[in-house]
Length: 384
Image 1: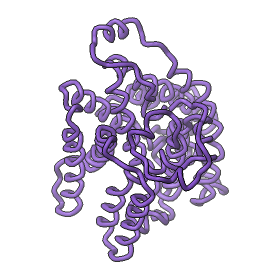
Image 2: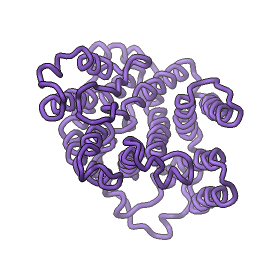
Image 3: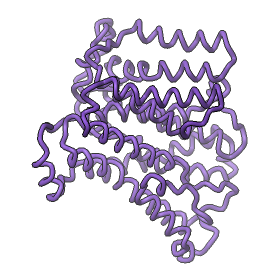
Image 4: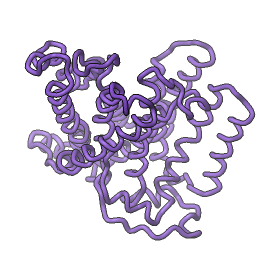
């Protein structure tokens, strides 16, 4: 979300008083940029433990059976569902589609080209020209330039880096899923489904039920990751649609945290622990996004660095895994974060933020003019 000047007040007892979600989510004065930043860093942390095969179970994974990276991705999908629903209801369909396009693809295209260029110049096992002209390299770019569900998200890039790790940019696999969520929400909205919150809630429930069926009964109804994303994305949409009935309070926060602690204390079953996280994470994220004020709100002025971190960090981690200093998990996490952060900052300020200002193309503008019923919105894109 585009950075704006914070009007936050210092954290006081009054600022922690119960607030109606509808009252606090109207502007851009929030902690969403900070939450997305932490989620992206959590993905780096999870990959630092899981990818090389050494220390495959990170501390969070030991407790819940899923890692910090999984929680980071779930966070992205929930926040996206909340903000994308807000965006769709405030825009015409062409405006909505353009907003999604400029948020995802310019940064993706530049990062893909940049990483392939750098890999060929400095890390490939082949001469640069030979590496760049290989069918597998061109195919990698073609798939990841489109990100069409079922076609996009090529994670492997042969001969890009001289390590035993086959993956080149693993996090890209979630982007087609995100695009699917955008399209599904738009389809539901076009037939009037978003006028009835129970529709979005039902889609979220289908995702949850599918995950439960797979984990408890071994019944495979839908890809488990797609089901998980359905749950979190449409939980976010449902929350936005019912925002006038949701109160964010310290008591609610403590209840959610207490539930997680209780479940962890009384059972070692990972599925139950994961269920407690899945149920409480949406409320925890909303409370963190809209209730704490003071100096935390100043992070929002910096910008949204999460997307740049997400699309650039993994190849850096792979390179570091092949070095003596970056082979271990914690050093890899720390070094990767330090290296990727300035790249992500530059990506936001020089590219992503500028792309969000691109005007609606004339052809879409004409289509938009013929679409009735939507007003322009200050709501930003999922990671804007």
